[in-house]
Length: 253
Image 1 (tube, one colour):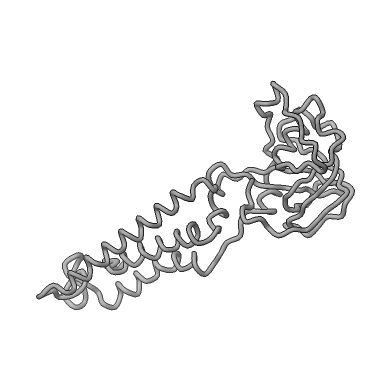
Image 2: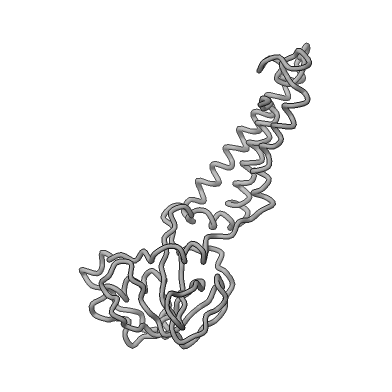
């Protein structure tokens, strides 16, 4: 394989750093990949990559302008076809291919994890610490807006049944259900990045299923169904109102 020249290495650093800054400093695209709290680290990494690239570019330019210099990286590798240690035909063409993954960050914008991931993973609801001490009272608003993961926790482990008598509003995306006449509302949670995503699900009854992957706001009432106290169980909500919404800027809880 042909060697990568200093000029191309510098350009790779600059473009990769600029891409990281593009998704973290000038847009919210980074939220598709990592948690919001990691934004400062992404920005710092992008700045560092650009700085390294600029230093490399200046160094390469000075070497090219040095009197008596035979060409770029003339003494950095084995002799090439021209006898000066650089294959002017193979190296640039091969090296430029390394730019394709970097350019893909600008040209392609992968969607956040969604229905496919949730459908092929179990509900990750586990007994929360507050279950022993008791859950805090719900707000008196109607309906009560809740994170989907928090609804799962109360539905499965709140022995006081605090969800009873409340209309609950949940936000998530539609996924196919396992029962007749039902579908699942799901949301993904990440601890660090998309690679560790876990699913929270609620079975929706009493309403037609939206298109798979569609983001919706569902208002309804908790339906006790004997799933309480079971890790990984999926509670049920009987819906009385569904509203289609746009995908949130931050798709993860």
